[in-house]
Image (cartoon, one colour):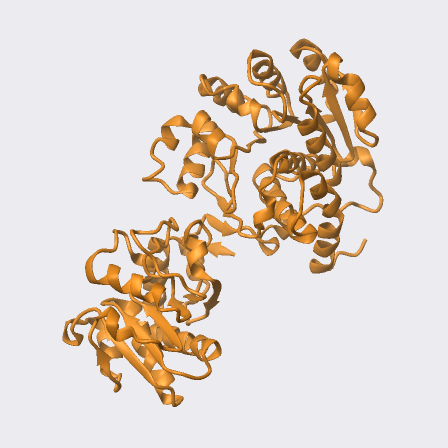
Length: 499
């Protein structure tokens, strides 16, 4: 579940050695895991290992030695002269008895499999010269590629392509995945990712204390809400969703229905007078209440049973939306802000952040897509070439004091305390109008059940992606809420929940 940065992985290696693990034993285990994966990918035919100067190249030499011992025809192409290798990589190269070919794209030929052991996760500068030409040749070869640790050319911490990167069909990494395995575009280069236990004791994580996690159910299982057989709807919270005017009501209704499907006991749509009839006609289980002005909203929120507010979907950009948001933040309730609620503060973000800082229970979630993020966090978005999505989310959460969720195929959720999750289960057809409104509602439904904000946002992101997977291609936003019961039922089975 833990995701490590390149620096954290290096620390894990160091701690393992300090605990008595022989460093070459780690390399040998890594190389053997690569050989096993190679054998499964290409049971017959020639194999070429493209090796670099460092430990990644050493892993490649071990894999080559193991595969040759199995009777496979293997050759190694080495970026440098063998006598310039150092440490464990040199030892691994000395044990290799097969051919070492010149580092030339022409020498690749047409093997059954290429093992990419060139750079691995530690690359921190653009690929140039001979390695650049070799990576291009690997990609053009038509041969399947097995990457060692991470496809060469991908930054292990950020997922960035450093000039050019290998496109692998499978990647074998070690001990724990890196952030770059999940962040785009890195994830698109990895193919199927598996990680091998190479002998690093899990206890090293107690020292490293990783703050980034893969957004999967096993990580947030302890926070997933399960109704109590003796419970009632009032115990599962009451969500209020604010609606836009007559011509802009659909987004709020999508959010409201999703909040109910997400587990909230009650949901009310707070509607301006001109949209009251259309909202009432379109809703059944979701209640409707006339709320015309921020003063009306403040009076309604005197009822402390209303424990979550969702604002922004279809709300309109301007002073009224700003005032409605500030009203919601003035009391002891969780608040989800999306779309127009975020853009309305683009010219004065500190006003929003100050209101969040004085919020009674500190449960605020901001859910921007990249465009909304750029408007609200202009100083961070301006550095987008220097900062990864993960780094930007963390900095934004710290600056705003809220949980920040940056949407996309690699949705990142970050908390002000530095914790972050990265999701990888969203199918392409989830990119459809209104899907973000549904996500806001799902987060609200989980907050209503007293799930903490960081976990509520992370759970909702995973369930959102999974609902889209359940439905399949052709999905529109209205389908997401209807797919949620199947997702929840699957989770109950997965968690062995007995009601």
